[in-house]
Length: 155
Image (cartoon, rainbow, N blue to C red; front, side, top):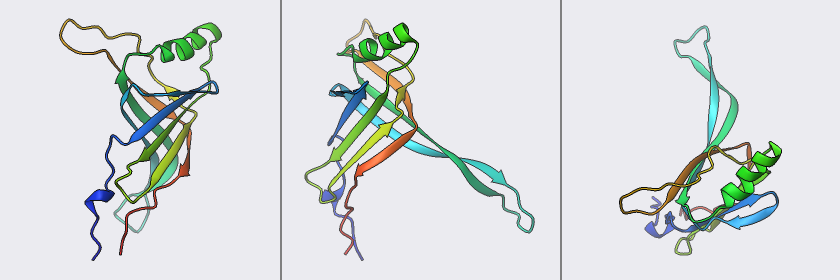
């Protein structure tokens, strides 16, 4: 029986994020947490001859969340100002690279296209100890898996 090697698990710190806004790449070094997922939208399919209701996938939706330190004006300057002046968001994508050199599973690179943030954080002041943080949800309408994990050894 094959057992997963503990070294093949991926440290959640072993990744990079690059945001492309209007054709220019910005390494998102201030990120503290980024996650994305694709959810299937399903419709009920009642059928004769069974007591179970079936499901049919009718579409998919890409969503995610970015958290980070507020140490840059990129979102305000490159996204919000563009929208304010033109009425349109600039084209954006987000690329994540996950590679833990202690794991044998290799590297995964995913590019989210049609990327749009839901909120542009301006500032977050507080009277107690802490640092300025921002959080926003986002959507995307497609992705490309440009490099995939080789997977753990199974033998």
